[in-house]
Image 1 (tube, one colour):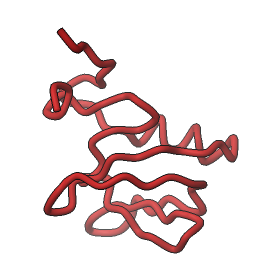
Image 2: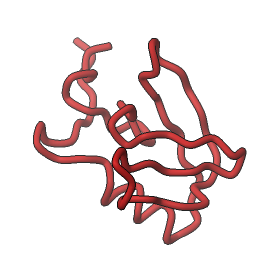
Image 3: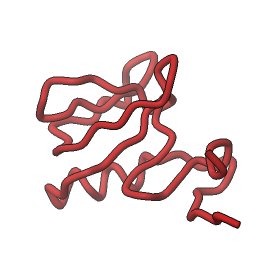
Length: 82
């Protein structure tokens, strides 16, 4: 059985993303945008005041927090068995 580290059902990745942003650490993300895609790099900004909060990556990609299913191997519980 494949068991993965997950966040709690009612939690978000925001605290982890903020920590990675503050320490200028690379992130590996799985994003659900009409299919699961992978992206990696540095977070250049976090916008939590937008209608749909998002992060911006060093490649210019903007990713809504709601679409992130995994950060550095930690999964959202809805995707823990993909």
